[in-house]
Length: 352
Image 1: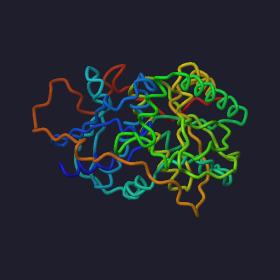
Image 2 (image 1 turned 180 degrees about the vertical axis):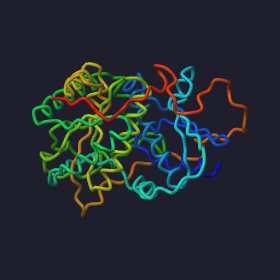
Image 3 (image 1 turned 180 degrees about the horizontal axis):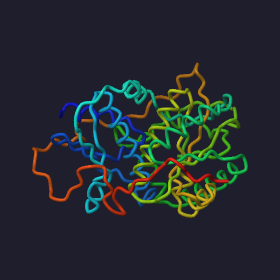
């Protein structure tokens, strides 16, 4: 059992994260795999409330779930199992064997193929069937995806530009970004220069300004056929950010299998004022967690290299077994307003 849980935590290390900080750690004990936030990798300036760190951990959680399902294990997920321990984000408890899920087996390979591509997408528009499949993948994880109309994309572009201007004017923000990017980043983490565009891509909505040129060649084409969408949900607590990360993972892996490129754009939700502007794009019917740019991949192009990863083993704790604490959640029942409130994703409000 320990080997299966360690394997799941290892697969989870391929998950996407803000600035590739990989802000998670794992603890294995008995039949349980616990996910914790790693505050040492938090972005105190960019992400003071740990929204994006928690979302990143949610993607790692979904990767671990896939890995266990691919091995034929049935696991129960408890999100925020103990509200008095806010860094303890989730617990996977294996409760027995299950038929091996072929989709999960395929997804374990897709996980290793997924990567971030910041170049403009210059191919044909994403088909409606593909968009529907990606939106369904989001809904299956308890969140929703709103595809923006052209006029809303212009509003998003304005919000992203304003957020970028606000952040780049802050020396502390600049220092934090510089720490995690380029050649000075910590080994195994961050955004290397070979994944940062050589020049600003021609995009409708501005991407991240890393403060320096990278080494990634970009075409002169414009991403006019790109689709922009908002990942959102009904509430705005830690458990919701965690579920949003699970939804991002599900959507991204679905997109990879469909040949669709996904680029998360977080600048507009990092600043409180522009986050409210993005919320208005979904008619105030939910809270925005992230913006996604979707576009068709060039099948003849392998794209940029994968971002580096930290070694898995030092980040997986395997303490000796100990008795369970009284009152700790043992199933997937809600544990209070901060804990495990469960959403019914069947009927999302439809922004107009």
